[in-house]
Image (cartoon, rainbow, N blue to C red; front, side):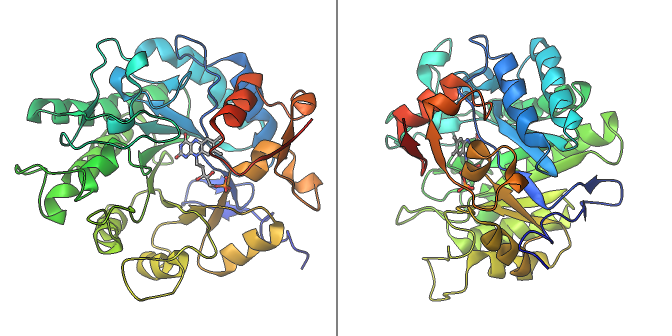
Length: 371
Ligand SMILES: Cc1cc2nc3c(=O)[nH]c(=O)nc-3n(C[C@H](O)[C@H](O)[C@H](O)COP(=O)(O)O)c2cc1C
């Protein structure tokens, strides 16, 4: 077998959905939506240029409430006015043969106040969030009980819009320290009501979002509709999220028969837990728990076909690829994948200029740059 053989085979995600290969485009915000957060033509071109290379495209995050925005010029899905643009996006992806998945999120304590009408940044609790490459240091306002229920409903309303726009599924963004993780985290969640404290209470929000999204999918879509879940396994804070917590949630997600579980990792092949003495990579530990009961995907630093094949042989059902697909839309036409970007090649790789400029300015990624 050559080094791409398994990657290029089809994969049955469930009894109704077959993917054209084993690669997933990892969700990546484009900073390129229109100023009113509707889908831009540049975004449609960017995604459709990559859709031929993968079995499934997960879009960059789209916010389910106005105050859930995590990036400048991010996709919005909190109002029906977004549906026509999202419909063009879903079609652009599907024309390439890939399934189209809309990533749903609320940025929580990492929301950008300058894009929120009343600068109202919310989270599980009023715990200070440190500055990141994307968001300022800020202390959010804790959500009231009625507002928590409203966010859950709004994940459902966003799912209905994704269905109306023609998407094949949605991914619940439970990773990267956004609102869902703000609830799961023992550091950021200091609540004393039923939404905080024990892991059973802290994961109540995640599970309620899953239940609501699945309820809406069952009502408005057919059985093939995919509801995936993306997760960060640990936090770096001393009293932060640990694998024992995330494993407990993962068991519940599997029991609820989510469409797939998507691990967000620094390095798929080597990342491991820092909270215990077990040196086994995360993908091997989690794949033993999931045991193919739902498809397992992971992203993180996969930049060669050998690494991607190895990840499939080490417990993953599908590999998610970010950087390498940004730089190489026609992935399988390359023997070696580069993650170098240059302003002169933006047209040839269908990369929106605002995305290139943002990546370069923010400087938080692994891309290299040439003239
Ligand atoms: C430009 C860029 C934008 C990203 N935006 C998102 C996002 O919207 N949602 C998300 O879950 N992850 C986001 N990520 C993380 C990627 O999905 C992925 O997990 C990470 O880049 C590691 O995979 P890679 O090394 O193959 O790129 C982004 C990454 C990049 C490079």
